[in-house]
Each structure stands twice: as structure tokens, then as C-alpha cells.
Length: 354
Length: 265
Image (tube, rainbow over all chains, first blue to last red; front, top):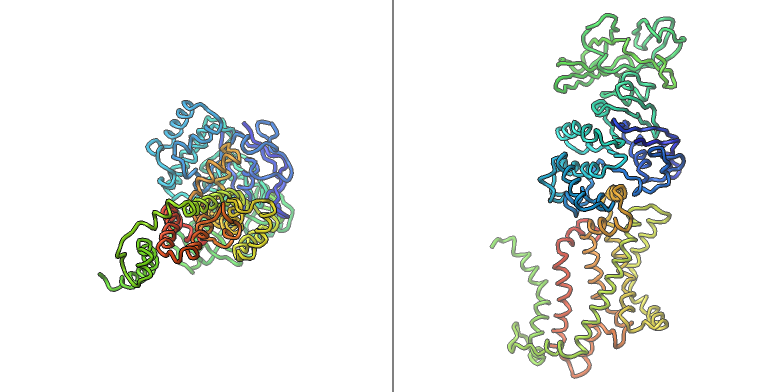
């Protein structure tokens, strides 16, 4: 199964919500749409589902143009961020409803519903109504409806965003096996980079109505193609700073400089931007060839096994993320060590150069 | 009894007093009513009710009223459902203005429309039929229903519609089997208000009918003219007009509170 977008655009009045986007999504792994709120993830899903009209371009399923096919005939499933179930139907009727509409025999419906309910641990609640369930159970009911239908494509629009932390982890671990071997194209929209990494598969980074990069998740995390991709795929936010390259030296405005190696050394002299992930800026010097940054600690956060510190150096603001618990004093001058080999270098227009 | 409950009890007593007086009067003879002050019926009689239930000119008044009120309620809700859906789900040119204009129809006094309606319905031979009154009452009941239903529909997320379409529901099937059941409280509240306003409206109902479709309220005026004042009979008729409203209120009592909370009632 494939779902393909060819040069699609979507307009609302004069505003372009999706700008000339092409994307080919395949079954067999998760396709994650990753982007901030308002970057166009939901708009893109609605275009694929046929819920919103295309301004231009084509949507293809299994190589066939479905641009003019109504939502009802596309044989797809959709799970929203909000727990959407039919309020006046029981859980059983909810899961059965798409099958009933499709005109399936009663005995076959019963089999499918029971199977889906068993996988999602809804069997004891089949005769309750959605409002009698907890949030997690309501969302599992919506997922069961999507699974029982055995559609060609399943769109999950931030399905875990409204769940509490524990339930989210639990359900997220279940998701990949839930859809494994079903042959449907699974599209999963999220605004959390961590989720994309945990789900694996492929990721399409979205920014301002465009797909900025698409490929295997780990690859894109390691090698972001542009500054936006690097920014989207980092939590806490990636450190960025302007540098001036002169000969072999990279100079940061705060008077810090280091020698460039590898591809970066071959660039022509001039101004560039660097980006470095917070876990490559550490409070202890554990590696040869690091660059010392001295900054004033502004905010510190402890999250169980990790500590982060936001510090200011010159005019720039930096974040350090390290394993273990580090005692920082807010306001103190602290030394951090940056690993320059982990730096990405971008041209002023945002494209990756080294 | 606690001190603070005295005020509400007095308030409720005052509210109930006229209704009690009406009911008490309906069990008295006209002579007793005219004789002076009595808290309870001295000679308890069911004669007044017997007249109403046996005299066709009386009970047809009720049948007529119930007939046009029911027709009106059905028309109003049937027309208002799709209209409210459009206002709640789509943005179109002038939608907000149109919505407000609908409401202003509620503000126009019925007397303004009595004459044109009379002339129009006479011309198309609808005068003195149930349809004349039922259609005339749509003037204020449809805008009211649209307003109430739109509020309830706004509480149903648009994602429900999308989920149903993705699941394969055609629009009519979705509307009838999923959407209306999820706003049934709103349908109940809207139907109640249509019923109520149509039931109590007198001017249009009287103007547009003569004999065949004469409403109960018009029938009640005749007691003042024929055999002197038949106050007991009038009180019995009044008591009976309260009953349909009370029955309808009983069924929608829980929904009404929801409608008030939404600010749409």
C-alpha cells in the first residue's frame, strides 16, 4: 500500500495552508509527520483523507488518483487528538459502525469487533457507552474502530496528546505492534520529537505548510538537512549561534574560537550558523578537543536522570543537557564544554553545508 | 425549619397562588365564585369539566390548538435542523448577519404580521385551517429553533462529522443516525419552546381562524358573552390549557437546565 501526494496545495481564502508538497508514504512502518502546532500536519492529513478540497495537485492511493474520490469511498481510518466516538452508541456499536455501514454480515462483524476489542483490552467494556470510559479507554475505542475496519490507510492525528503521561507511554509502546502486518499505510502526526524517535520508521518534518525533509527517522535525526529540520527535531531546543569562518578558524562572537576540521574546513570564508544539540554541551570536560564556553546560568531543570542548564554567553542563549544530577547555582558563571565535531554548519539561508 | 428557607417558601407560595386560585375556581359553581371570598370550594363540583368534555364547541378548541401546535413544532424543527447545521459548520458570505437577522424576527410583534397573513391566507384559501396558524407561528419559532439548535450543535466537535465520513457514513445517514442523536437534548429543548410559544400565542391564532380551526383560547372568550359570566367553566378551561405545557415540561426538564447553561434559551 502507498499513499502519495503530488504537488498538493491547500488554500483557505488567500492563505496557503499547504504549499506545493510531494510525499510518498508506504506501509510496513510508521510514517510520522513531525512539526510544531500550526505547521500543517492536520491539514495534510485532511487532504489525504479527502475532508478538505485540494487547491491543486493529486492524491494517489496504490498508484490510483483518488483526488476526486469522496472521503467515504477512500476506505481509510482516522483517529483524532480528541477522543471521538459516537456518544449514543455502545463501545461494541462504535467499533462495529464502519463495518455495518459497509454492509458486512453480522457474524463477521462480531468476529472483527471481538478481535479488535481483545487487542485493545476493551472486552469488559463492550456494552458501556463512551462517556462511561476513562480518556485512555475512549481513545482505545477509537483505535479499535480503526483497526477493525482494516482500511487501506490509517491516519492518527496526535492520538496521544490528550492522554496523561503514563497512559501515553503505555499506548505508544502498543501502537507499532497494533498496526504491524496489517498492510495499511500508517500516518502518525505529532509535535513531539521524542515520539517520532520512539516510533521509528520514517519521519516527514513539517514547517509552515511544507515538508522540509523526509526519510528514515534515525537518519534525519543524525543528519538534518537544514536549520529548520535541526530545530524541529530537538527537545530541548537545539543551540544555534552565528560564527565567522576565517581560514581554519571558527569564531563565535563571545571571543571563543576553534579549529575547523572535516568538510567545514573546506568552506569559503564568511558568516555561517552552527547548531549543536544540548547533550553535546556538557558541564564537565570528558573529551579531547572540546571548546570551553563560559556563561551565566539562567534557569536549571532536573528531570530525574538528566539535568539541563540554560546559560547566557555574550548575546547568545545556550542549553546544556547532561546525564546525572549537576548542582547549578542560578546566576553563577559556569564552564561548559562543547564538542565541535558534533556541530552542524548551515549557510545563512539555512541550508546545511557541513 | 431553618430561617433562611422562609423567603423562598413565601416566594413559591406567591407564585403558586394564582394557579391554585384558578384550579380551586374550576371546582366551584359560578354562583359561589360570584358570592364572595372562599379559600376552598364549598360545594365541590365537576360540572364545569363535564361541560368541556361533552360539548364539541369546547373540546374541539383543544383539538384544534393541539393540532396546529403539533404541526408547527414538527415543521419548525424539521426546517431548523439543517439551517442550524449550516450556521454551525460552514462559513459563508453574510452568515453572521443572516443569523442575527433571524433573531430579530423574534422581536417583531405578531400584530405587525396579522393583517398581511390574514389577507395572504384568505387569497390562497388557507384561512381557518390548521396550516394557516402552524405556518404563521413558524415566523418566530423557526428562528428560535435555529438559535437553540445551533448552540447545541456548536458543542459537538466537527471531528465527529469527519470521523463519520471517514467511517463511510453518507451525509444523510450521518445526520439522521449520528448527529441528531448526539444533540437530542437540543431537539427536545427547541421542540418544547416551539410548543410553548405556539400554544400561548393568541393574536395570530385568533385572526387566522373562524370556526373550523378555532383555538381554545378563542373559545374561552365566548363564555363572557352568552349566558352571563360562566366563571367556573372558564376556570376549568384555563386549568386544562396548563396541562399540556406541564406534561411537555416534565419530559424536557433536565434538558432545559442544559439549555439555560448554554445561554441559548
